[in-house]
Length: 569
Figure (cartoon, rainbow, N blue to C red):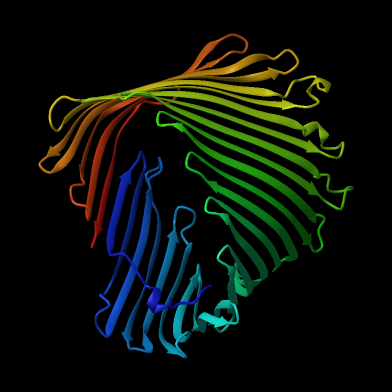
């Protein structure tokens, strides 16, 4: 629940119309948005927003199943120097017949609002309307009312305050919904090198809704306090210290109390050749669930480092490191043995080298290490390490009308259980993958291009024996993908692309012997037409014919397509 009437002065809707349609094997999807508002030059103003999406599913038995959602809202108001008044409307409807024939929900509102500004920086906006709500077979009529108060940039002593308070109420004959929300933001600049900000929030939400023929209630109370200290240590060094306290009380079947205490430090250095960002975060969250044994306490510490180093105009190094340590504790060790520690290490390194004016090398490396340790012996058999390593060199060639990009990638994913040797059957496993791809584009005439893209993937997975660092392959795969196309970027003011794609994936089982288990081939031509010459209009239409040959299933032939229109006005 939120106020039905946004602040008129802050309404800046882009004028646009967007439609999107695409078809797959047995599904059709439509998505559309529309937004517009009047020019802020007259006393009578308006704005409207419309969003919809529809999905049609045609299963094998042939019966059509629809899923639709539509949202429409807007304002019509008279604008004066110190006050605004008008109508607000809101309509939302959802129907999902893919799940059930009687699965419709909706909410429709129409009302009056009045926005008054007094003492220059205080705005008061009450509203009152009538609404209709639908929940499957339940239909309610009731009142929609509330208000909003905004104190904008009020100065007292050395502080500046911004206060927003709102109350939103729904009154139906059998049920009620309410939400009260207060947000206060205080800022103060001690000197030109330091600033302090304090954020306080108080929120109470109560909502009643139908479950079958009964009415259930959920209440959520949230309190939050957040303090930020900013320090400009020098023109190139900045420091942020942040503390946050948050409590939530949730009442739904069983009550739940959640309390969070968090500290955050951020140091930023902006140098001529070297930039880096260091962050450190600690948090302590407790959950107290009434009448259950799932109470918990989660403590977490996280360190992150981002570095960007311009070695010289031809060489650049980027480095990212993250470390996260989590400790999850439960007070009931008899019934709940989920206590555990977790550690994560993430490394990302990218090195760029411009070998020559026409040739650039990118070298990317990635490593992810995750260790999970259960404290109690009942769960310690699940203690494990997950390690992921990836190496991805890429070579880009660009000269005149020819561009070529070559990429190769090696990936290894290991999951090793700490006590695997105590079990008769090993549980550790490994997944490996190798990818090589190449793309080529040749401009052979002013607006004419010839392009090709090819990719080969080799992968396998199986049991991993960590002591011997050996693998028993259980399954392996080989995937080939190829695309060849012709492109004309000035075809009757459109961009036209015609091409052919080929995809093949083969799967082998290796137990007891290597045997080809499945072959899947998908191939066919495609055509794509787009218009992008005017920045206010974008249009795309594509159509492809797919021939799918599957060794396990009957062969299929189908058309898939896509239509998209964006108009900005």
